[in-house]
Image 1 (tube, rainbow, N blue to C red):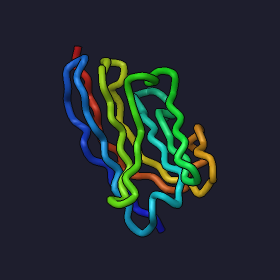
Image 2 (cartoon, rainbow, N blue to C red):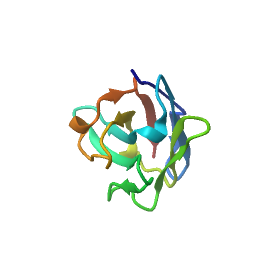
Image 3 (cartoon, rainbow, N blue to C red):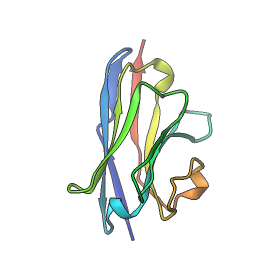
Image 4 (cartoon, one colour):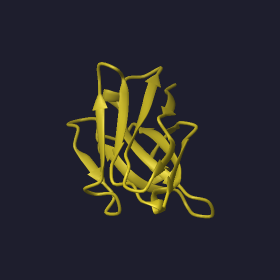
Length: 124
């Protein structure tokens, strides 16, 4: 059973940066496709970025492309989400997720394991 713990959220001004971390235990991140999702109040959980376990290909939502970058450190068993040029509309709870699928899904239903989430608030 994989446990995922996110960290790195907080309050930042528009245009600033944050790096989220997702530490895994009970499993190896290199053997899972890993994704980041976010959920703002009153909205559905939406895909942000993912990395596939097999060859490490990445995928980013259009809304964050060019600003956010997902990466994986197999030695530290950790997945990161580097967020630059943050906007107020990026405010949400960010969740890390793990999937046994070879290619990382973009739908939340494709993930079996979830972290508890970390709050990101971007002020204007």
